[in-house]
Amino acid sequence: MLDYDVEAARYDATRGGVPRAVAASRAVLALIPDRCRTLLDVGCGTGLVTERLVRPGLQVFGVDAATGMVRTAADRVGGRVVQGNCHRLPFADESLDAVSAVWLLHLLPDALTVVAECARVLRPGGVFVTTVDKDAGHDVNSDVDQLMAPYRVRRAYDGALRVTAAASEHGLRRVGEARFTGHGQGRSPNRTAGDVSRGYFASALALDEAQTAALAGRLSGLPDPDVPRGDPVYRLLALGKTG
Image (cartoon, rainbow, N blue to C red):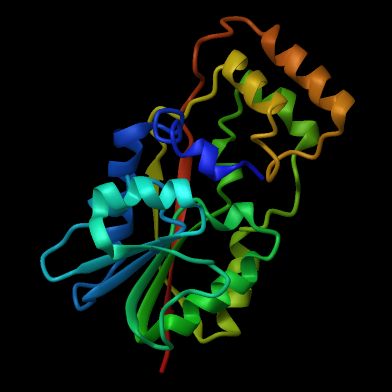
Protein backbone atom coordinates (compact mmCIF):
# COMPACT_ATOMS: atom_id res chain seq x y z
CA MET A 1 0.00 0.00 0.00
CA LEU A 2 1.27 3.45 -0.91
CA ASP A 3 1.78 6.15 1.70
CA TYR A 4 -1.10 8.46 0.81
CA ASP A 5 0.19 11.26 3.02
CA VAL A 6 3.21 11.35 0.72
CA GLU A 7 1.16 10.74 -2.43
CA ALA A 8 -1.17 13.68 -1.74
CA ALA A 9 1.26 16.23 -3.19
CA ARG A 10 1.55 14.43 -6.54
CA TYR A 11 -1.64 12.39 -6.63
CA ASP A 12 -3.73 14.45 -9.06
CA ALA A 13 -0.91 15.08 -11.52
CA THR A 14 -0.17 11.36 -11.79
CA ARG A 15 -3.80 10.18 -11.96
CA GLY A 16 -5.26 12.03 -14.92
CA GLY A 17 -6.05 15.28 -13.11
CA VAL A 18 -9.18 17.29 -13.86
CA PRO A 19 -10.34 15.46 -17.04
CA ARG A 20 -10.50 12.13 -15.21
CA ALA A 21 -12.19 13.75 -12.19
CA VAL A 22 -14.83 15.37 -14.41
CA ALA A 23 -15.61 12.04 -16.09
CA ALA A 24 -15.83 10.27 -12.73
CA SER A 25 -18.06 12.88 -11.09
CA ARG A 26 -20.48 12.95 -14.02
CA ALA A 27 -20.78 9.17 -13.98
CA VAL A 28 -21.38 9.09 -10.21
CA LEU A 29 -24.01 11.83 -10.34
CA ALA A 30 -25.83 10.04 -13.14
CA LEU A 31 -26.42 7.14 -10.72
CA ILE A 32 -27.53 9.29 -7.76
CA PRO A 33 -31.33 9.73 -7.75
CA ASP A 34 -32.64 13.30 -7.84
CA ARG A 35 -34.37 12.76 -4.48
CA CYS A 36 -31.02 12.41 -2.69
CA ARG A 37 -30.07 15.37 -0.49
CA THR A 38 -26.87 14.08 1.14
CA LEU A 39 -23.89 12.26 -0.37
CA LEU A 40 -20.76 10.97 1.36
CA ASP A 41 -17.65 10.42 -0.79
CA VAL A 42 -15.66 7.70 0.99
CA GLY A 43 -11.93 7.66 0.36
CA CYS A 44 -12.26 11.13 -1.14
CA GLY A 45 -8.50 11.61 -1.49
CA THR A 46 -7.58 15.12 -2.60
CA GLY A 47 -11.23 16.03 -3.19
CA LEU A 48 -10.74 16.51 -6.93
CA VAL A 49 -13.80 14.35 -7.67
CA THR A 50 -15.67 15.36 -4.51
CA GLU A 51 -15.71 19.07 -5.36
CA ARG A 52 -17.33 18.22 -8.69
CA LEU A 53 -20.20 16.23 -7.22
CA VAL A 54 -22.33 19.32 -7.49
CA ARG A 55 -26.09 19.43 -8.00
CA PRO A 56 -28.79 21.78 -6.69
CA GLY A 57 -30.05 20.56 -3.34
CA LEU A 58 -27.29 17.98 -2.84
CA GLN A 59 -24.98 18.41 0.17
CA VAL A 60 -21.72 16.53 -0.28
CA PHE A 61 -19.31 15.33 2.43
CA GLY A 62 -15.92 13.64 2.13
CA VAL A 63 -13.97 11.30 4.37
CA ASP A 64 -10.43 9.95 4.03
CA ALA A 65 -7.97 8.28 6.38
CA ALA A 66 -4.81 10.07 5.22
CA THR A 67 -3.99 13.40 6.83
CA GLY A 68 -2.32 14.75 3.69
CA MET A 69 -5.33 13.87 1.55
CA VAL A 70 -7.79 15.41 4.01
CA ARG A 71 -5.77 18.63 4.18
CA THR A 72 -5.79 18.97 0.38
CA ALA A 73 -9.46 18.03 0.09
CA ALA A 74 -10.46 20.52 2.80
CA ASP A 75 -8.93 23.31 0.74
CA ARG A 76 -11.29 22.34 -2.06
CA VAL A 77 -14.43 21.23 -0.25
CA GLY A 78 -14.13 23.13 3.03
CA GLY A 79 -15.41 21.93 6.38
CA ARG A 80 -17.41 19.13 4.83
CA VAL A 81 -14.32 16.86 4.72
CA VAL A 82 -13.38 14.84 7.80
CA GLN A 83 -10.61 12.40 8.62
CA GLY A 84 -11.94 8.94 9.33
CA ASN A 85 -11.65 5.22 8.80
CA CYS A 86 -13.71 3.76 5.97
CA HIS A 87 -14.23 0.67 8.13
CA ARG A 88 -15.97 2.76 10.78
CA LEU A 89 -17.44 5.84 9.17
CA PRO A 90 -18.06 8.82 11.48
CA PHE A 91 -21.75 8.97 10.54
CA ALA A 92 -24.83 7.59 12.26
CA ASP A 93 -26.88 4.62 11.10
CA GLU A 94 -29.24 5.44 8.22
CA SER A 95 -28.14 9.09 8.12
CA LEU A 96 -27.27 9.54 4.43
CA ASP A 97 -29.11 9.36 1.12
CA ALA A 98 -26.11 8.30 -0.97
CA VAL A 99 -22.53 7.08 -0.57
CA SER A 100 -19.83 6.91 -3.24
CA ALA A 101 -16.49 5.09 -3.25
CA VAL A 102 -14.40 5.74 -6.35
CA TRP A 103 -11.09 3.87 -6.78
CA LEU A 104 -11.15 2.60 -3.18
CA LEU A 105 -12.31 -1.01 -2.81
CA HIS A 106 -9.60 -2.43 -5.09
CA LEU A 107 -6.99 -1.36 -2.51
CA LEU A 108 -8.51 -3.16 0.47
CA PRO A 109 -8.22 -6.87 1.29
CA ASP A 110 -11.20 -6.34 3.63
CA ALA A 111 -13.18 -4.36 1.06
CA LEU A 112 -16.37 -6.21 1.90
CA THR A 113 -16.41 -4.73 5.41
CA VAL A 114 -16.43 -1.30 3.76
CA VAL A 115 -19.44 -2.32 1.69
CA ALA A 116 -21.20 -3.29 4.92
CA GLU A 117 -20.25 0.02 6.52
CA CYS A 118 -21.57 2.03 3.58
CA ALA A 119 -24.83 0.08 3.82
CA ARG A 120 -25.03 0.91 7.53
CA VAL A 121 -25.01 4.68 7.02
CA LEU A 122 -27.50 4.61 4.14
CA ARG A 123 -31.17 5.33 4.67
CA PRO A 124 -33.67 2.87 3.17
CA GLY A 125 -34.05 3.86 -0.45
CA GLY A 126 -30.50 5.24 -0.51
CA VAL A 127 -27.84 4.24 -3.02
CA PHE A 128 -24.20 3.17 -2.82
CA VAL A 129 -22.14 3.91 -5.95
CA THR A 130 -18.75 2.26 -6.27
CA THR A 131 -16.10 1.39 -8.82
CA VAL A 132 -15.62 -2.35 -9.35
CA ASP A 133 -12.97 -4.34 -11.24
CA LYS A 134 -10.78 -1.23 -11.24
CA ASP A 135 -7.51 -2.89 -12.20
CA ALA A 136 -9.18 -4.82 -15.04
CA GLY A 137 -10.30 -1.49 -16.48
CA HIS A 138 -6.68 -0.69 -17.28
CA ASP A 139 -6.27 -3.72 -19.52
CA VAL A 140 -6.57 -2.39 -23.08
CA ASN A 141 -4.64 -5.34 -24.55
CA SER A 142 -1.55 -3.25 -25.20
CA ASP A 143 2.03 -4.49 -25.24
CA VAL A 144 2.33 -3.16 -21.68
CA ASP A 145 -0.70 -5.21 -20.60
CA GLN A 146 0.67 -8.33 -22.25
CA LEU A 147 3.89 -8.14 -20.25
CA MET A 148 1.97 -7.61 -17.01
CA ALA A 149 -0.60 -10.36 -17.66
CA PRO A 150 1.34 -13.32 -16.15
CA TYR A 151 1.54 -11.50 -12.80
CA ARG A 152 -2.03 -10.26 -12.51
CA VAL A 153 -3.96 -10.98 -9.33
CA ARG A 154 -6.90 -13.10 -10.40
CA ARG A 155 -9.17 -12.47 -7.42
CA ALA A 156 -9.65 -8.72 -7.17
CA TYR A 157 -10.80 -7.22 -3.88
CA ASP A 158 -13.36 -5.18 -5.82
CA GLY A 159 -14.58 -7.90 -8.19
CA ALA A 160 -18.15 -7.09 -9.26
CA LEU A 161 -19.58 -10.47 -8.31
CA ARG A 162 -17.81 -10.38 -4.95
CA VAL A 163 -19.06 -6.87 -4.18
CA THR A 164 -22.66 -7.49 -5.24
CA ALA A 165 -22.83 -10.74 -3.26
CA ALA A 166 -21.63 -8.98 -0.11
CA ALA A 167 -23.93 -6.04 -0.76
CA SER A 168 -26.97 -8.30 -0.94
CA GLU A 169 -26.22 -9.53 2.58
CA HIS A 170 -26.69 -5.95 3.79
CA GLY A 171 -29.86 -5.11 1.93
CA LEU A 172 -28.26 -3.64 -1.18
CA ARG A 173 -29.25 -4.69 -4.68
CA ARG A 174 -27.97 -3.60 -8.07
CA VAL A 175 -30.03 -0.74 -9.51
CA GLY A 176 -27.73 0.76 -12.13
CA GLU A 177 -24.36 0.82 -13.85
CA ALA A 178 -22.16 3.32 -15.68
CA ARG A 179 -18.74 3.46 -17.29
CA PHE A 180 -16.33 6.35 -17.75
CA THR A 181 -12.92 6.94 -19.27
CA GLY A 182 -9.83 7.45 -17.15
CA HIS A 183 -8.52 10.35 -19.21
CA GLY A 184 -4.76 10.68 -19.07
CA GLN A 185 -4.29 7.27 -17.47
CA GLY A 186 -2.98 5.40 -20.47
CA ARG A 187 0.23 3.63 -19.47
CA SER A 188 3.54 4.28 -21.17
CA PRO A 189 6.23 1.57 -20.77
CA ASN A 190 8.67 3.81 -18.90
CA ARG A 191 6.13 5.22 -16.47
CA THR A 192 4.71 1.75 -15.85
CA ALA A 193 8.20 0.39 -15.19
CA GLY A 194 8.72 3.09 -12.58
CA ASP A 195 5.35 2.37 -10.98
CA VAL A 196 6.13 -1.35 -10.86
CA SER A 197 9.45 -0.65 -9.18
CA ARG A 198 7.90 1.51 -6.45
CA GLY A 199 5.08 -0.92 -5.66
CA TYR A 200 2.23 1.06 -7.17
CA PHE A 201 0.54 -2.10 -8.50
CA ALA A 202 0.34 -3.89 -5.16
CA SER A 203 -3.39 -4.59 -5.61
CA ALA A 204 -3.05 -5.69 -9.24
CA LEU A 205 0.17 -7.69 -9.52
CA ALA A 206 1.75 -10.50 -7.50
CA LEU A 207 5.50 -9.97 -7.76
CA ASP A 208 8.53 -10.89 -5.70
CA GLU A 209 11.67 -8.73 -5.74
CA ALA A 210 13.32 -10.52 -8.66
CA GLN A 211 10.13 -10.51 -10.73
CA THR A 212 9.67 -6.80 -10.05
CA ALA A 213 13.12 -5.98 -11.40
CA ALA A 214 12.70 -8.26 -14.42
CA LEU A 215 9.28 -6.89 -15.35
CA ALA A 216 10.43 -3.27 -15.00
CA GLY A 217 13.36 -4.04 -17.30
CA ARG A 218 11.18 -5.66 -19.96
CA LEU A 219 8.71 -2.77 -19.84
CA SER A 220 11.49 -0.22 -20.33
CA GLY A 221 12.65 -2.17 -23.39
CA LEU A 222 9.35 -1.84 -25.27
CA PRO A 223 9.12 0.38 -28.39
CA ASP A 224 8.04 4.01 -27.92
CA PRO A 225 8.74 3.82 -24.19
CA ASP A 226 7.32 7.26 -23.37
CA VAL A 227 4.13 6.98 -25.44
CA PRO A 228 1.00 6.25 -23.37
CA ARG A 229 -1.15 3.35 -24.51
CA GLY A 230 -4.98 3.51 -24.48
CA ASP A 231 -6.89 5.09 -21.58
CA PRO A 232 -8.67 2.71 -19.18
CA VAL A 233 -12.44 2.51 -18.88
CA TYR A 234 -13.80 2.19 -15.34
CA ARG A 235 -17.03 0.54 -14.23
CA LEU A 236 -19.41 1.91 -11.62
CA LEU A 237 -22.22 -0.02 -9.91
CA ALA A 238 -25.16 1.56 -8.13
CA LEU A 239 -26.52 -0.55 -5.25
CA GLY A 240 -29.82 0.54 -3.74
CA LYS A 241 -30.82 -0.13 -0.15
CA THR A 242 -34.16 -1.82 0.30
CA GLY A 243 -36.51 -1.18 3.16
